[in-house]
Image (cartoon, rainbow over all chains, first blue to last red; front, side, top):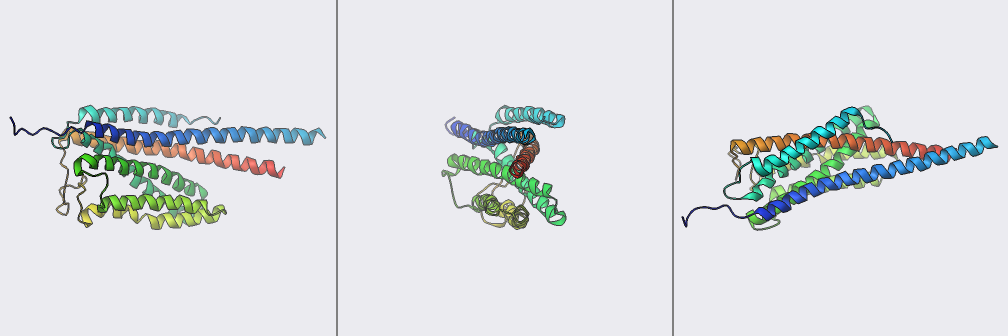
Amino acid sequence: MLLQEVPVNTFNYMLLGFSAILGIMALFLISLVVRFRNLYRDLEQLEGNDVNERTYTTGF
Amino acid sequence: MEPIPKILKVLNWITSALFVVALYMVLFFAPREAVMGDVQRVFYFHVSAGWVGGLAFLVTAIASGVYLARGDHRWDQIALASVEIGLFFTLANIISGSIWARPIWNTWWTWDPRLVTASIMELVYIAYLLLRQGVDDPDRRARFGAVYSIVGFISVPITFLSIRIFRTIHPVVIGSSDPAAMSSLTMDPKMRVAFFFSLFTFTLVYVTLLWHRLRLQHLAERVEQTKMKVLSA
């Protein structure tokens, strides 16, 4: 009984390991979402400018 | 907003579902390893992340080669998108390996050939992004990037083979019966199922992310073109 092998308690390290992997993957996903949002915002602004410019030039 | 293609939507759902199943398999289906305990479960995702890193850099090298041969910028975009994904997954691989090593090797870091070559590989591809940042002309940027990524790909097989070529304490997982392997990890059938399922799921995650990253690249180009149009009007 005393010599019975018991696995070491490494549960906390397992949690830390999975948190690191999932955290890094989540970071990449968040970076994708943020960059998509920023680009769509830029595009909306630019196309808005484009429309205003055309309105301005054709108006004269 | 540009609509997401239907196939990509389906792929998103399949990948998410498989990822949840993979997580269940490594946490509950695979048995606890007798010596290392629960921390060994990290290995399934650790190896899968490393695999995606290597695969992503392989795709980069191939796309770069095709770009140099054909001069089509779409291949340069694939190379760039793939490097970015590869860097994130390699980072996940290195950090999870370090966390696994703490209770098993009693240290967060050791100058083991596998750890060193994996870190060098990560730095090689960070340098790829820095190189691209430093070149303004898009054609030169794509050409320099392509040549660099093909040369830099040497770091990938060196990392993979380092545990066979050099004396190392890192366990050999794929081909663990190889007599050149100093230490190996033997898996029971349930562990093997969880391992290959994780590998497959991570490969699918890579494909899905690559598709999204390429869509981002196209959007960035559209913004750039609109900007030029507005400025020249």
